[in-house]
Length: 160
Image 1 (cartoon, rainbow, N blue to C red):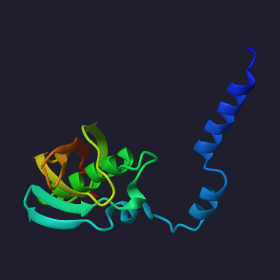
Image 2 (image 1 turned 180 degrees about the horizontal axis):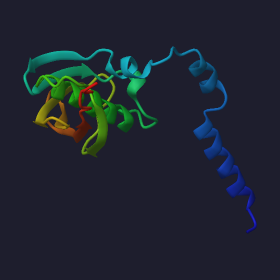
Image 3 (image 1 turned 90 degrees about the vertical axis):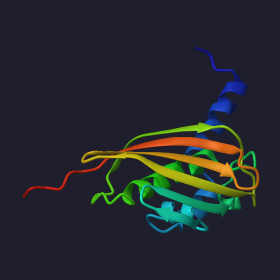
Image 4 (image 1 turned 180 degrees about the vertical axis):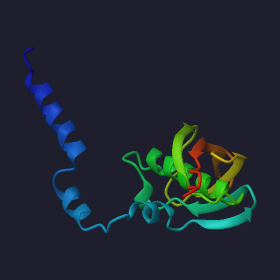
């Protein structure tokens, strides 16, 4: 198959985007190990903490924006992961577990400086599996930004 000049340029730009060459790569080389969770969670305020339920809030910081200048879907999914996990932990499970499935429905956008409320509820916490629902809302209006479900395998304690 013959490549057109425009197609080849497009392929190179996709490769460059995925490999993060250039200026972006240099600044990322200096990041500490395991920086990701603090990068996402910095600025989170816990407003309510009770068994099986957590409510948090934060203002959308510039570091979590995508190219369209609203909160990146990956940041939203990470909040579903981490705050959903925390809701499961509030029930008293002895294990943090591992994610089996995370599902996120994106319903609206959150913009820089906008206050977002995150509510996570443990729907089921058994011996081996925990399930949480997580909802992100605009704090001012209550409008839903995203809804997520998080299923975790709660590793059973070793009998050794």
